[in-house]
Length: 376
Image (cartoon, rainbow, N blue to C red; front, side):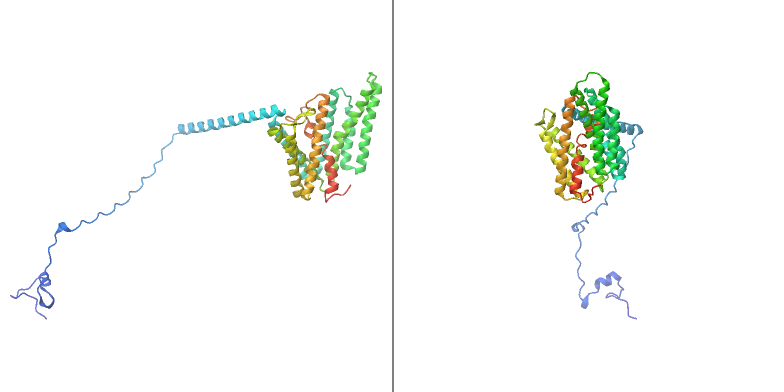
């Protein structure tokens, strides 16, 4: 074992003294400069931890405050509804003053009427037969009452009797028998009127008697016969789509004419017959009928677009002439509407004045253009 380290005098050294005195090669110890504490830079402060967000405290809302807020919201909603209704009523009054029709009622009645026709044609086309029969009977009654009020003598019972027979022949009888039934109906009501006048002995002039007879025949042609043409078209293969199409084009024509006439109508079309019809309205009817005809031809009737143009313009022409023709009749007998059965429209025939005459070109174009056409 080695001796413990000591100094020159043989005294043992402590560990620190031994460390300080031990130098390489026995040299003198390395001097250590004194450290000034003031010269040492201070330690930078540690970053403070982020403060935790304060917990959200909900402000309690009393039941009274909630009721007040609901009452205020309800009041604002009622005020907005009232303002909107006032604006709508004002617009409706302006349109009514210009066209003589209540727009809101006319729209509602038209939608209801269209829904009934649409449902019968789409789901079970035989349902359209009693609907058409009812329309024909009401139309005969409406037209006969208007003519009688103007001094014409129209026999209602025979008119309705042979009118029903004529309408049913359009659907259940062959085409040639329908024409025979038309001839029979016209002759029957004329003869009935002449015989009835023979027993009247009221001194009515021959001119008035002849006018009564001719007008009676016209009632059969205008209402039940044109209705029978619609049923004649209905019974053909795919006929329900053609009936729906020509009614849709006629309605589109009326809507386009009404919209354009109200918006920009300035130049009267036939002031002596119907002062409120304008050429601008007719232009709107041309656009609407043409567009509807093309769309229906392409997507429902399986025809090319040009056939849709022909179809639309043909229905447009018949609808316009029918509208003007009924306006002429009403002006001649001195009435504004045939009746007041349909609010916003007037009478039933006021709504059908463009549809009934359109049965003629619709049936004709079916046999000329339709790929389904087979004469029955």
